[in-house]
Length: 205
Length: 333
Ligand SMILES: Nc1ncnc2c1ncn2[C@@H]1O[C@H](COP(=O)(O)OP(=O)(O)O)[C@@H](O)[C@H]1O
Ligand SMILES: [Mg+2]
Image (tube, rainbow over all chains, first blue to last red; front, top):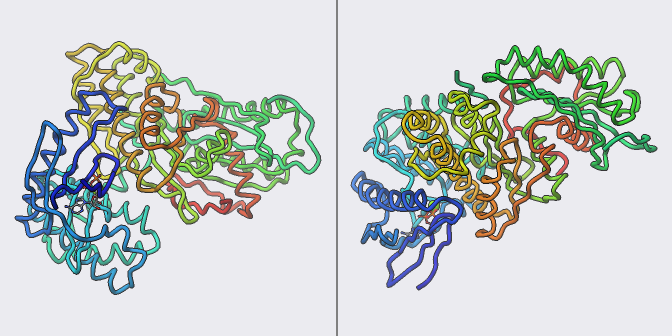
């Protein structure tokens, strides 16, 4: 058993060539809430991974789900997290990869799949192919609001961690997104709207 | 704190805080000594009405400045700098603080600096706890933000996409007549409650509290208040701690600094502390006087900025209601 990642919410290890994602208990939160979150996220991740594949988005194949143990088994993707590669990439490569990332996001949204944590840490680059992982925060929805929020999550990730290439990455990403999703323009508009709304001091009532 | 003579060559800054319902005047030296830190709370029967808060600030600022000088045993001419909260915040409040600061600076021929309120929270926290390079979890009535320093700026990892955590709890308390501010009342009631499910909404590293507020209010119509208060806190805090944990791992920091008025909540501190010990990080909590909005934090950020070379002409000190934390060049680090 080889641990491949110890994230904030899960431990991932390789067992007989298969990736096991184990959502671990968090002692800071109340046990009922903890149980509910780990169960629903494991369930959702399995379901959305399968839907994403069907939508033409490269993703691991789900092999087994254990809701008692909060374990998800999936195929191993040989590759590297995109977040780690960005700083070493040439401009041309950045444009190519992020146009592709945007295209994949567009394919998800076109099929009513919201990723929920669309960040470069959840994109694995394997040769020329980009795979999306970590769908536990996702949902199935065709609302503009949900898709716009998904885009905003990506934009914020770029702003907080890839600030050196913010513009190039966003431009490429959105051009790919427009290519694969008919409602791209409205969704981008909504993303900007959500961002404006949220900024500081919204006192209701 | 208290009266003492000004030492030779000491650089003293008066900070004026006025972004929301609290008005603060503090004086801090270049060595980081807080000479005085006076805060005047506005009595809140309901939510904040920006124009009323502005009137309150305008009415009380002159006497607060006088009291601060008296307490510190100083005269205006012994100061080296005036700093004020330039944003983000409520427009009318910001303008009152800005006008007062400009007037003082002109009258006493002192340099003036408008500084960022959110960055001031981070810096006063670092000063008072000794945190070196923390992930900051800043939670108040108006802000909910998780930030960390990288390449010259405080980068925003997560934040609320609708209402602030403190605002969510305050509004809940207000609608149910638990008094304002609502935090302490909800915290007390929650002690005897048990868990009921409420919407838990995390988007990437961003948080949404408006759906939680609506659902908690609805739940309060049929369930015990203690249970709803408990569940509201558990849900709202767990969302925040989850985001903080992910940001901590991603930003690769070893310290978590708590900032903002909600930070006094014991349950929140406990949850963050637990998360930190699991991640092998240290939780740092500033003293209560500097957790909430206050003038000393503005003064200290004024000192840091000025000594690092920041200068503003009077006409460059217009308020910025939506000034983002990650737009500020951190010249002093
Ligand atoms: N199917 C997979 N094949 C190869 N590596 C994977 C796979 N799934 C996850 N990983 C690795 O584990 C890390 C964490 O996985 P992820 O699902 O994103 O969990 P978390 O929720 O903790 O972020 C990823 O960044 C990636 O490096
Ligand atoms: Mg991940």
